[in-house]
Length: 119
Image (cartoon, rainbow, N blue to C red; front, side, top):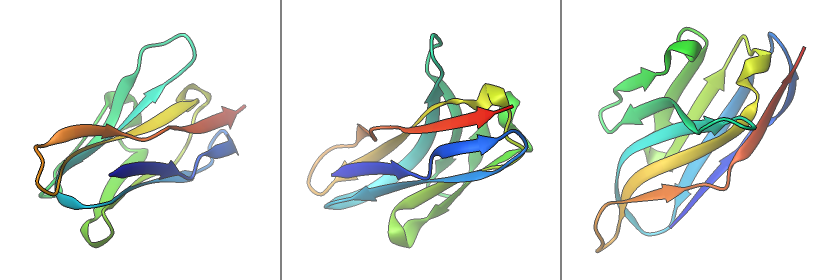
C-alpha cells in the first residue's frame, strides 16, 4: 500500500492550490483520510479530515478557505486551498486510515508535499 501526495508548490498570498492524496495497492477499505501540516519549528497539526460517509472537519484556521473532498472510485482525496496565507506555509502530509486486503486497519502516511505561500 502506498499513499502519495501531490500538488504542492509556491503561490502568492491570496492564491489557491489543490493537493491530492492517492492511496494505491491492495486495499480492502479506507476509513478516513486526513491532511496534516508541519511548519518549521512547529508541531504537526491536523488540518482537515474526511470520513467514509463524507463527513468532514477542519481546524479553525482554515475553515471557509480549505475544502476536503473524496473520490472513492479513485481512492483519492483532495484538499482545495483558497485564499492562502503566509502562515499556511508548511509541509502537508496525507494520513490514510485503511485496511489492506487481509490485514487490520492501520495508519499509512505519505512523504509530504511542500506548500509555500509568499507575501
